Length: 418
Image (tube, rainbow, N blue to C red; front, side, top):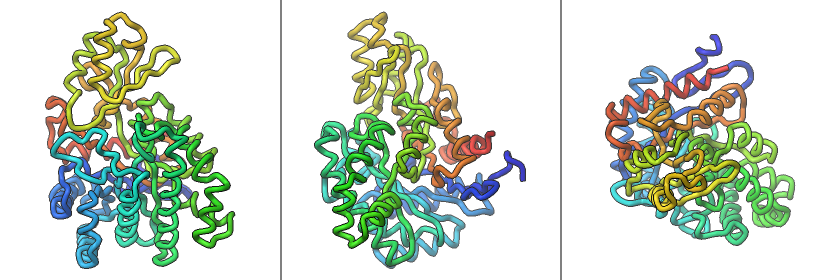
């Protein structure tokens, strides 16, 4: 099999000794909060995508579960029924999106998506439950990953104040994951997902948190004391079960480069447990006309953080309407506010390089996927274009199942790039 043909449905085979890549898409693109609604999406939507891209082969599912849905699925009878259903239909769950705890559709979400966060016990209880569910669903011999909020929203910080309390709950969850592995033999991991305007915005923030808080000597000692593990084994266990989810849109919006982000995590020994295959909006010429066209993306459901680059300087905004208003007040010729380039946290289809006067951030995503295809940096990939329903209508003309299938095919092509 040549390099460009290395693909096996959602388990992407690779040459040599490299581990297979598990590729799926996140079901948060489909509205649904209860378990019945989520299961209906799997039955109607996920299987429709499978029929398009992997009709005769296993198909990986990135399952999004609200806390209410998780409570229902945790029932042993419901869980066993779903596990049997997955086997019968050629589906398998390798990752869960545990970022949104509550409603993720049907109204304004904005910064409510982060609550409860890792400063609150509800987040710990929810994450423990998701791990138990995933341990029961993940295929034998495979790891499972759960992505989660990056500590907490920035206004709940700053990092130096929030980090000790966040680390305390993460250690408690790591103990749950360790005991789960000891009991079941299945490895489930938790992946913190850096995002603009959170206490962990960038790869550098995440590494700082791991090195100075979660993996600091005092933190490892505390974990050793509660688990009874020797200090070296305690640190190894924390590193094995806790890591990061690298969301390609988020990192691109922060003007990081793929190699910069990946190398930083590798050098620090922080595992990249999951990559979310996503692309944001890029305004290479943020003049008044482009900013006026961008107003159609300033919708009211999700946060769309903006980072404006002016020379070597970055200016950050919590949401797109604020950035547009600030630029309008400053005037079209103001270099600081107009900037040289804007990047917007609005997940757009990864295959759509241009959206009217805008580009997407394929310039970050494509080389990242090429690196993942030729290395063992990360084995879990999840396409996540949850904003499909709020895209301007001209950018979502095709059925959503067709768009998802195109995203998966585009991703597999880029994974095979030299």
